Image 1 (cartoon, rainbow, N blue to C red):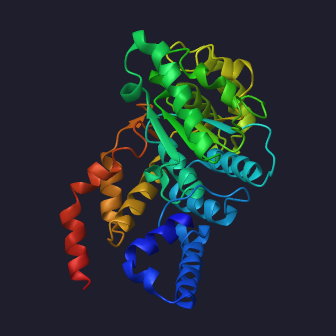
Image 2: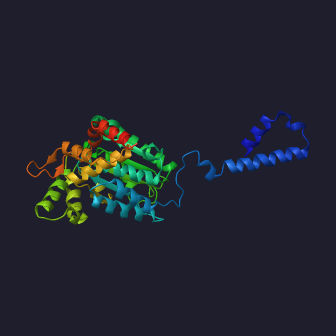
Image 3: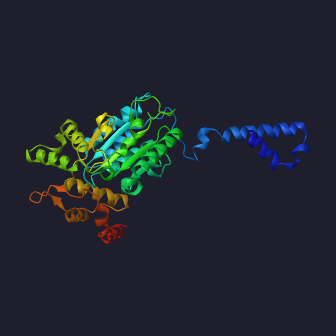
Length: 342
């Protein structure tokens, strides 16, 4: 307020020549204006603000996004929805929410992490409160692991101090140097505060291809035994996945204290995608580009994908990762369809 009044005084050089009543009125207007402009509801319409203490994630909106945009992942949708809503609705969580998402490329891990980030911070990955780390980009050199640990701790500490609801996403965990991620263990543990900072409202998400082979084998075993993929439950995969990742030397979580101390709340398996799921991805991408769905194009794009095992050809070996690029080839067909319908 004093700053605003000082500014008013500078802007009105003749203010001192005014009658006392006029001066009082001007100061009153300045005070009211300053109070209005500094009100959080007004300020946060123009500048991104950290959610308040009572912030709750909209369960209906999250479920709708997962149902309409994430295909073939009944386990991931169910586990993540329950975990996130339980965490969000808990006014006093004992630790930050920590999820480890596993599966082959193109199965939806990055997509799900983006959806979660957007539910907490509408700007998603563009938000200053959402932090994405890529192992090969941010931590490339093994000989600098000690420095990376210190930098990572300082970055997380500083950002959670500013916004308790910060979201941290670590991609390419299978390429991260073993031991590096253990630097954040104090922040994930059951401490009320660490050096005066509480991390209990933050969310940490790990993305990894490690364990994908185990998940694929389990899914194929279910298929071979005549069971539906929707019959696969978390208990069928999570214990095997956590042990497999812990003992995988190509995993950033190899012999990690985060697993040893049970600080990862859920190991979330992403199943390999079948032909029908790839077609769902194609349809969604066509709609996102503003085109009407052309089933011939959908079929053509899906048929251009490669599937495994060689004999049965059940699962896409790249998930939906190359759908956008392959759809580009059919852009002219979609354009003609759109013009013909006008």
